[in-house]
Length: 115
Image (cartoon, rainbow, N blue to C red; front, top):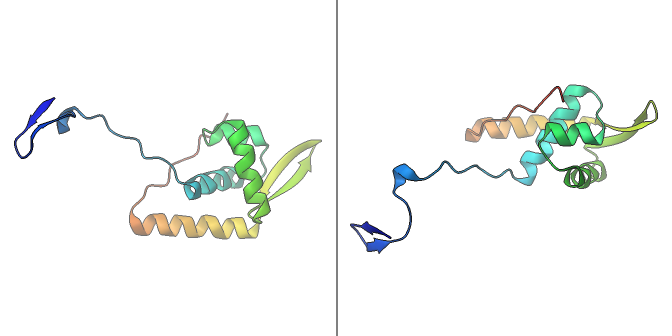
């Protein structure tokens, strides 16, 4: 318990000792990250997209499935492997996301490339 001058005793840490809180990614942030990673690679298998966006494979699979259903990604086959490619609609989503992030001052994180 800490003594707070305005309200008496309160639980919590003083402002200086609070750790920086990490902002949680919204669904739309995750969509944009996945689309960006696949766009950068040109085509991308599920595991590479999951690693590059720092997501578990099962959640990445579910999210990529949603993006395919919405027409932002397309599923294809390259050398006997299932890969995903960005559609024109996916590019439009990514451009809109970047513009909106710029308007409100949200930094667009760089994907983890090279894994």
